[in-house]
Length: 413
Ligand SMILES: Cc1cc2nc3c(=O)[nH]c(=O)nc-3n(C[C@H](O)[C@H](O)[C@H](O)COP(=O)(O)OP(=O)(O)OC[C@H]3O[C@@H](n4cnc5c(N)ncnc54)[C@H](O)[C@@H]3O)c2cc1C
Image 1: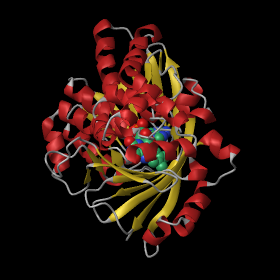
Image 2: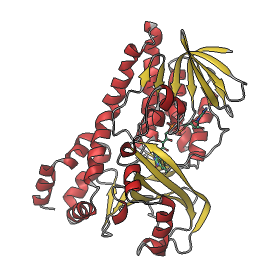
Image 3: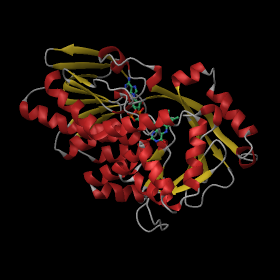
Image 4: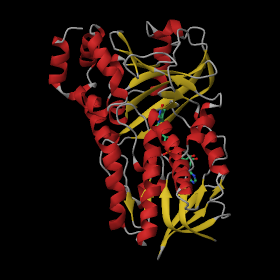
């Protein structure tokens, strides 16, 4: 039996970020994962500036080590393709000059990226990491939680339990009461392809809005080894209503879509097409309780428009670590005290997710996507403004305001 103040279940980006932040705060932790690393995680593999900002905040040397490895492609912007095939190239920075500075985003296979994080975890003396150890039991004690591994090899008594074991977290469902709600949940499939034609030379990631699949989208994200991460995601309730099967839809797209079929004609599937769930943050949930906090997907924190969850898992992990520091100082681990965790996560991520939800609803209709794409494509001024939105949230908020579009349309390009 091990006793600790901090036990983290799940060592994906959320759990690893929590352990690293705690470590830099001088707080020892136990980190447990059922897998042995390197391990795959079904994902689009796109890593936003949120992650690199936080790694840099933790320790600039971590970011240098990340940039020093050949495991990521630098991403400089997004190519949107409307249902009517209108293409819009939007750099992540206005007045974009290629390789002018550090890239604003990356694509890195989760096999590599998560392993990189685990290597960082292993550098820290005050993180005890158990891999190949699946936690099966959670039991409330007078002073926290007792967790037990499936094979009985590990038993930990902790004052604070940080649950970061992903979209299918049993603790999140059974103990914390976060039910799956199909209107706030998405499903997605992902495949690796070699030999996809016409990948962007500056690794712009591609989001294709397809008529039958809005507000979901098809993506192509270029990887550093010449492969591409290719996938399709969609809100679960809409999938069920339209009776769509994502594997079949992906197959159909690659073989029949007038633009895509040429690009994939001689491309080779590497491995299998795999699917996984995305618990979206479009519904506000309680993500803490007596002696526990939920981090990342276990706390339903995926962006409802883009499906981005790595950055949000990182942010919630950092906030959880800082909250635990407060708990230790105040010697208070109660649900009432931990409300501060929910409040801070909401302050940092809530408005962005609510905006994404509004945009998701707006993009539900192919005609609206086509109309917006046509307006934007013919107007350099709007394109310039949109470039600033990646880094400027207040600018992004304008997107849901009709007046913004009216002003933009009547401004000379
Ligand atoms: C198809 C798809 C595409 C996506 N694309 C992107 C993208 O491009 N960019 C992006 O930012 N996000 C993307 N996401 C979302 C992203 O994958 C998740 O939001 C992110 O992985 C969340 O990190 P996490 O640490 O919370 O959970 P996870 O990464 O799921 O990590 C959870 C960890 O817990 C471990 N675990 C599970 N159960 C147990 C147990 N009982 N005991 C011990 N350990 C356990 C697992 O082995 C795993 O290592 C995508 C998701 C999907 C499904």
